[in-house]
Length: 312
Image (cartoon, rainbow, N blue to C red):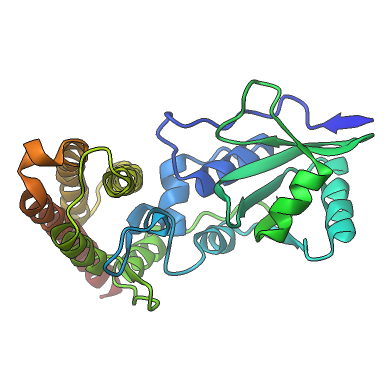
């Protein structure tokens, strides 16, 4: 027997919804009849304002790390009812996933040592046992088949699985709440391994100066991935701010303008990491990273000015 949620949509890169955790959550909510714009979900979760860098090192976690659980923030603000599926006991975890799917609820999964992007479980087979998943690298429209042994291997490596329901209708957080979250994310303390928010730019620039990336190297590829992560995030921040009801405080319009300028700077930086030698070398890259950080800081200052006005 094979049961799949009917017409469950694919997950795709290249549609300007590249932060996979929020993109997957949005897909689940949209399937349930709650179509929340991606920029709004990014803003209310804080993902639109995040930045991270590993201290004095090139590490893939820089593109993924956040000061606190981004998904948890979105869940709380939306009024969702989350169900975390315990995967520590393989048979019990499998049974819980099967129950959710049989009730028509998709299951979001992410994390672990090998699974970088989020995915969605939307179907199950019983003979032989397997799960059907939507991922960002599906081979075709049918989805990705995960035999039970493959899923259990992922679970043993730290993958998490959650289902979500909306028992009392969605709650829409107010602008003031989101602005306070943006300020907090931008000024978050490091965790001993990462620098977060505005302070991450200096750590990134210093790493580039001390360990210059070479075109096509792992370091350059990682930096391009981090730039793309920031482009996706701040594009969402700009879209959300620019779409707020008018009249808005002039400080919010200033923040939106800063993010628009920031996006141009990041596009230039991405080209620089593709061809570091032609761009002017590590010194030029470090200066552009710091300049982008200063523009980000101007946007955050404008957001804080708005918070002060509203708090009066």
